[in-house]
Amino acid sequence: MQISIIVLNLVYAILGVVLMYVSYRVIDRLTPQVDFPEELKRGNIAVAIFIAALFLAIAIIIGNALS
View (cartoon, rainbow, N blue to C red):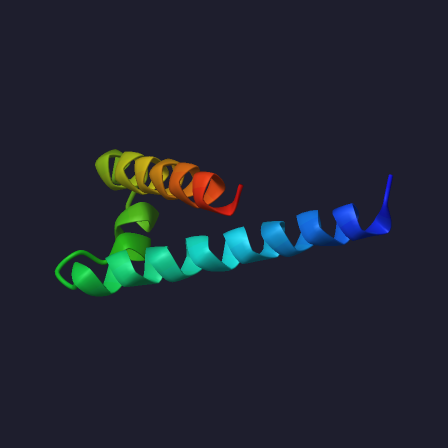
């Protein structure tokens, strides 16, 4: 396996994680009335499902955009 392919995959992985974090922060800023971390600490299942669906959707979008 070529080292350039490994490095490129690592760059894509890091870029994907950074974009995932940035997109989560954008959604967090767009919904100031909902404190996601606090709701998760209280055990709000609906917020947990929403965040999970958000992460999956963003991962699919980023994965298709990077490939």
